[in-house]
Image 1 (tube, rainbow, N blue to C red):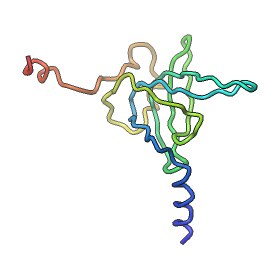
Image 2 (tube, rainbow, N blue to C red; image 1 turned 120 degrees about the horizontal axis):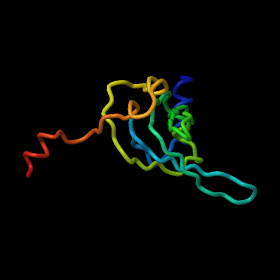
Image 3 (tube, rainbow, N blue to C red; image 1 turned 135 degrees about the vertical axis):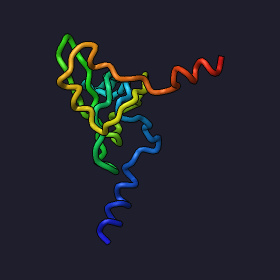
Length: 125
């Protein structure tokens, strides 16, 4: 009985526009920043390395490299502060969490592109 009540309350807090992205995607997360009485949108670009939780508690973590130092930021999926997510690249990954990227540097952090295979491209020509 209690779970049904919680589900009904959570349904009202979920986003209408579902954010469609996956682990390994390179994304731009547009967040609303309140500065005094003004509001602006700030962009955070990086690779989605983790996604956890469900319902209103769902979160995702984005990692990027800034001046040789790794920076990670965690965002709630259903937050009104997250204005939009633009997907730049889709990567082909075999894990749900990409925490191993924290130990890698330089070209080793590149992920394989998801999409058409090289032999499928030649067959369409």
